[in-house]
Amino acid sequence: MTIENDLNRLHGLRERIATAETALSAQIDKVLTPEILAQVEALRNTHRAKVETVVKAEKAMVAKIKDAGLELGETVKAEHLQAVWSKGRTGWDTKKLNQAAKKDKTMLRFKKPAGKPSVSIRKA
Image 1 (tube, rainbow, N blue to C red):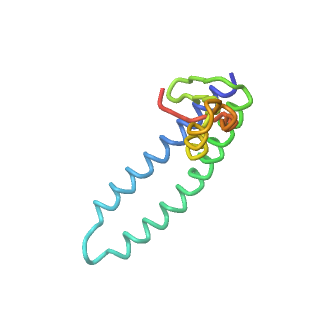
Image 2: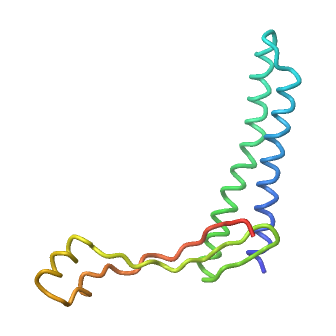
């Protein structure tokens, strides 16, 4: 299924981000002395530029998966992640409901329409 493939690709992107963060910390620990703080800042800037591209790709993948999940209308589970579909929820206007309850027992006319369905990405 295509959403499963995209979920696996999203997991890979997130793993790359975490690995890059760990590598940065290790590099900083090796060079962190008062004399070379400028080098640390240069490393941070280089790291930021490298990770920014992956973060943008991760955000785009999340949007793609959510859109596909909304179209499919069901939860999809892959090896590491799942796109959990949730139906829209119904809400109540409590102020109007309380006012109506004092005057009238037919309160359903104040029920708000159901919200839009959604998709969330979770660990499998």
